[in-house]
Image (cartoon, rainbow, N blue to C red; front, side, top):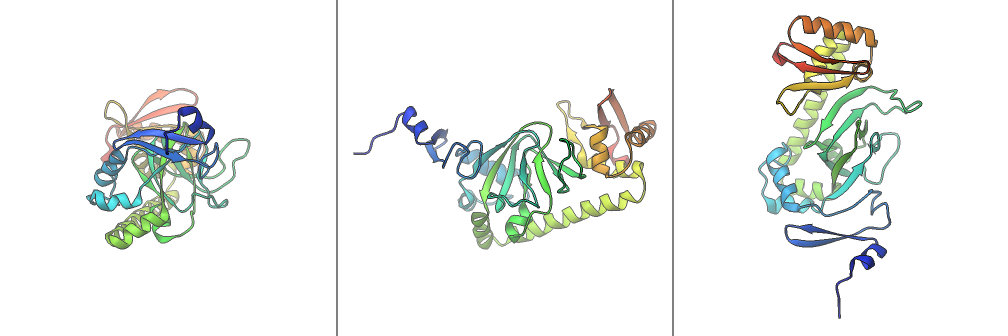
Length: 275
C-alpha cells in the first residue's frame, strides 16, 4: 500500500515538495543540481504564471488558460550574478526553452569571453522581470546569437520546454505571427543602435537611454548604470566622453544626473520624449 514519504526520505531521494494552488506538488530532480542543471527546481503557482502570461506578455496575450496549460509545468532556475543562461558559443541543455524572467535583471550582450572577470563584448539591452526571452529561437528552433546572463545581482527565470511551446503554436498559429512581430522589433532596435554608432556618443545616449530606463519606486524613468557599463552599451567612447555627453544632455533639460560618485551615476529622464 502506498504511503506518503516524510521530509527526510524526500531529501534522500532528491525530491522537492512545494505548495501550489491545487495542493502539494512533487518535483523529482536527478541530482543536487536539478533535472536540467537548475540550482533548484519546483512547480511554481500555476495560476500566477498563467495570469502573468495572459495579461502581461504580448506573445500569450488573452489566450485561454486551457491552452496555456499546454506549456506547463515551468521549471525555476536561479542565476547568481553574471551566471550565464544562454551562450551562443557553448550549447546548453536548456537552449530549447522559452524563459520568463520572474525576478532580477538579465543582460543581453555579444557573446565574448570575459577577461579578468570584466566584460569584453557590448551590451545590447537589459531585460527585466516580466519579460520573455528566447521567443524567436524557441518557436523557430534556431540557435542563440547572444550571451544572456544575470546582471549585477541574482535572477530567477521560469523555463518552458520548447516542444510544448511549439505544440501550442500549432494549435494557436497567431503565436508565430506574434513571434515574427517580436523579431521585427528586435531588428529595429538593433538598427537604431547601429545607426546611432555613426553619429557619436551623445546621439547614442539619446537612442539608448530610453531603452535602458526602468521605473523606480517613485515612478520615475531612471537608468542606474556605471559609466563603464554605458561604454559597454555604446560599444565605443571613453568614460570621459560619456560624462561630457551626459552633462550636455543635462544642460538641455532632458535628464538629470542625481548621483555623481566615482563609479555610479543615476540618470533620471526628465523629458524622455525629447531624447
